Length: 469
Image 1 (cartoon, helix red, strand yellow):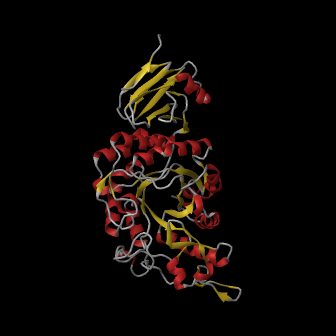
Image 2 (cartoon, rainbow, N blue to C red):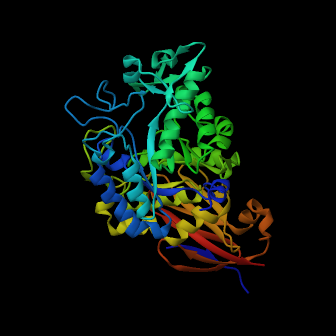
Image 3 (cartoon, rainbow, N blue to C red):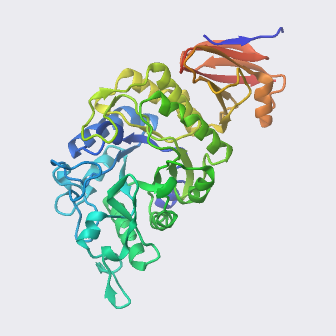
């Protein structure tokens, strides 16, 4: 129960120029399938997203990593020698898992089916070039001639551009950076991402390229220049060790970028996002200028519903470990921080609780259209176990979220004058505020003084406040 203390009395040019105008929303295969998803499983999920979640703005369906790895004995997320590559050293879908890719079609047929469902198609790619291509010393395609890349009187190959000292820190047998100071290195990256555009890809999730030791600004810049010519949303990952200063260097080159390591279904993972999201909001990075549009700090996928395990060789086989209170807290924070919303569960087992979390109309309204999103520190008690966020709505409303991160039940209070102080442009001094709680759908009442809520461990409330002076 929440209580208010009262006092008496697609033209392409048009699409590209407004790319990711709000945080992208969709589904990603990683949390439910790891790397093992097949064409049949992917399209089954896409069909359900189209039928049940597209109307709520979930428009992207993304194949996460290793779609090119053969699913055979000995293959795993960091195995070597199991990938399917073309004559130019580029990854192509495993034809056993993705049979429509045979005959050099790549993801063309899958993308067409996704588009016919009214959805947009995304893929995950790794930084640089595969170790397998370097070991095979494959030639590099010059897309302007359709032949092997030549410069300075010779043909260049994968071994010329691969930087063996710059392997991906968490997939050391799989991929390494390319030397983007070389024309051949740029030509390779251009051949990769131009091919993705030809397949009909609408979103590229570029991994092991942002955050910490794997940051590669040179590759991000080259890829951004290629994708700038296409209506393709550019996503960066994994975000481990990312800082606002680092993000300011990339935000204009991309549309979304992870700001944490992988988020899984543990309370510790959820709670760790509060400090990070606060810092990126304070740096004015939410909705900053991005590639052909805007960019958004990405808190990672939502591991809700039917899942697999991290770095697994299995598909979905268990329900999320987060309890209902923790799920509400996660979805509320992601919304208030305007993170992209990427559902990670197996959509074929989309249950009522998960569906209601993903489609709550106020959550989606806040995620897409709110402004002035920030942590609100003026609450009682103010300690590491309590947090609050505020934002303003496009119709003049104020959104207030109160979170209990502690293992114990608590009671949190926010004062209306403090909200007025945090939102000086709203002119709330002396205002009376009508309060409604989103998750319970309860009308709370009218207050001029404060709003309070008893909260069990890991729970939250989300208030819509319509205030008049």
